[in-house]
Image (tube, rainbow, N blue to C red; front, side, top):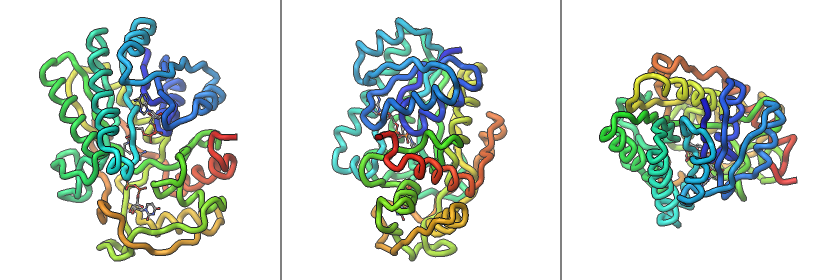
Length: 338
Ligand code: NAD
Ligand code: UDP
């Protein structure tokens, strides 16, 4: 079975390509490299020993998509391509709606014209808004998103669900990720943020490696065990393996399926700092700052459904997430840039 991976040069995409190739799938990657470096795919090839056919293309470019679907034998698409910076989406909502929504509509249209109706979509726990209950099951109602990025995920879930409802040949799997961190065990692949990181773990590792002075912890007055925000951090390799299980699921009866991919365990920001220091022996200086607008106190999953229906559970613990993130940062202080 061959899989087209959009956004496959990115953080989660590149780790997923490793797992797909290691599971025996043929993979083709499409990415416009707007937030990634093609070197990630060279690292994939070094790990798996297999070539990664790559198209530098945009999901908004219908002609380019037509060409790929004509040339390649695509049976399923894992769709990672999208813009994902929350703050930037507030400044540039049009760009986010255009890229993420119009891009996905174009992709899906080309897919159906070529009779490809297996789609695995990167969604996010952000669609739950301030969750109605914790731990969050897939039954938890979707909520109000606090930024355009989140709305693109929520709206795309609706759009893809409607498309599946209208044409029952579609197999649509919506994967709601919690907080992916960590890196490949080899230390050759990991997260490669542009500029100053927005997310917690890359900020922590850049402080640890001396590129940034100190971590700002956004809020210490939340209703959590130590006052800092609690999230469900998941190792990116576990997340990648979840996609391999989802691909297997597309071989069953078509339909709409929705799964949380998380560990089911919540760690606070301070827990992360403490675990990182314990795992690596490196100090992470921090200061408390005001709450970040749009943040919620607590978010963690109940991932029982993925266990029952996909046979998937997250295997790595917080120590490995910290060790692996650190190995990548230490070996590659400038990410994929030399
Ligand atoms: P990433 O930025 O590393 O990967 C996304 C990739 O898509 C990049 O390589 C980028 O160049 C590419 N891309 C963007 N727009 C494109 C377009 N128009 N055409 C072709 N390629 C395009 O991000 P990631 O962390 O690997 O996230 C992958 C997906 O998972 C995204 O859809 C993201 O929104 C979603 N997600 C990520 C997280 C997270 O915390 N990292 C959490 C929930 C959901
Ligand atoms: N966070 C922080 N300092 C940072 C980045 C993040 O204190 O520099 C906190 C943030 O407020 C949240 C948690 O870390 O409580 C996870 O944030 P991240 O942006 O990584 O993911 P989110 O859950 O917002 O998608």
